[in-house]
Length: 267
Image (cartoon, rainbow, N blue to C red; front, side, top):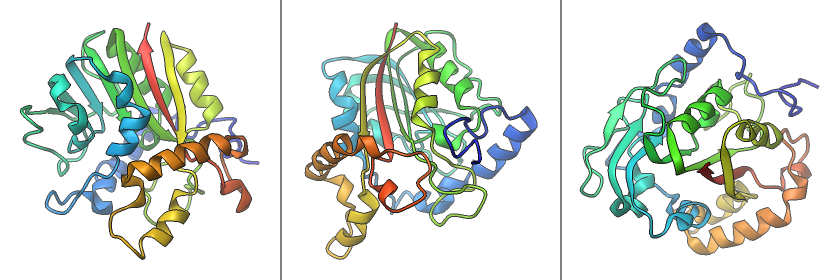
């Protein structure tokens, strides 16, 4: 089997700088072009998910400097905006930018092609990467950078798909050209190479696409926006974790969680 589909290698992680640049140019506006670049119509639907699996572990803490990698409009920070003093967002798209979030004016910077984060060591109290790393080729290098810019005792929240998302060598409806999930064993190995303590590892999005196809007949609001569904999904994801396969080859193998959510503390 293709080593990239059998959890043995992560596609893109060993790319040359030229290959990374080609990837970057394809992805720069690809997510925005899927329908999220209109500020008047775009709605962020993941607050319940992020609270349950991530932000609930940060209660009572205040963060002087926060970084959102690929955080676009910055809507993910709305539930904790009162806990933040300064918000920095690394975002490639010129279309996905907010002037104000709560009382904060986000500071936007463009990503470096190499994945280097142009901030000093230990600058941030909190770093988030929610659904961003699977759009990046050299994941292991970028994770190293996230660890480097997080201060000792600071937190990193990561949510990423851990399935292949289909064969990325072919066009896929609703997905960008290059995005692919990160195999769970490889993900765990990448994190283990840095002074990072996993506070919580949880799983989500088990059969969510299936449930959503039925739910959309009754409501325009996605089913995963509701806390009650997120709690059910957490139960299903834990129960069916044993069936997780990176690249499903039949329908039964698709009955498993699709994403992992990490709450990490820098040692």
